Image (cartoon, rainbow, N blue to C red; front, side, top):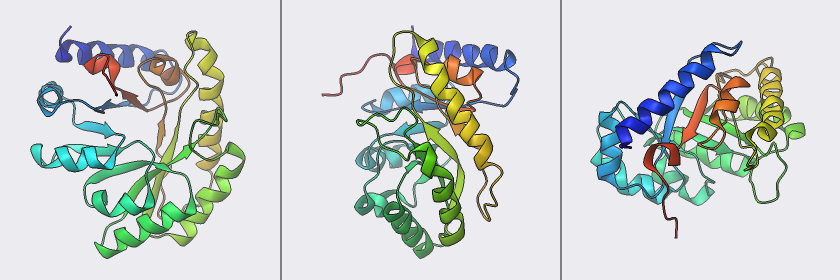
Amino acid sequence: MSIKENIEKVKQTISQRREETIFQEEVILIAVTKTVEIERMKEAMEAGIYDFGENKVQEIQKKYDSFPEEIRWHLIGTLQSNKVKYIIDKVEMIHSLDRLSLAEEINKRAKEIGKTVKCLVQINISQEESKHGLSKEGALEFIGQIAKDYPHIQIMGLMGMAPFVEDKEEARRYFRQMRELFDEAKQLELGNGMMKYLSMGMTNDYPVAIEEGSNMVRVGTGIFGTRNYA
């Protein structure tokens, strides 16, 4: 199938699953473009994709000038504090805010250019050692502190990943825990924050994530096919 056909298939699945849930929210599709060539990304853009998710700062730097201003870039991978300065003026949203030292740097760099940066707080909902993110127990205190002390950061929601499992139903309990935490976070007094997005679900499990309340999914393989990350 072509990239355009893959996108149509993913969008159809998103629409069907959303209609079957109690949430009925619009679901934003982010195309994960890790290692994807610019030409193929432009195919996705021509098929209506304007949200691109990159894992690495250098990939955004390399690709940024090849696309129109309408493209929304999302930094979805782990972000080192010393690299914030390279993408602070380029990204629509940072999905991996998970520590105060990173918040300090984002806030500092954003202040320098007169910008408020949208961020998602990354939660390690599965408590896997191989994954980054806050524990769900520490998340609300962290969010409250960011809202109070870092005026150039706008907390837009949460991001989390379920373990990669063959039976997608096994991922459901993790997505449900994320939704419960998201609902709790929405009750906080967030100042300039806005708890709007629950980003969870990738190619392997996004239909289940949508059923549990995700309104932002990150799909790479389902759009561009299997890639070689070596």
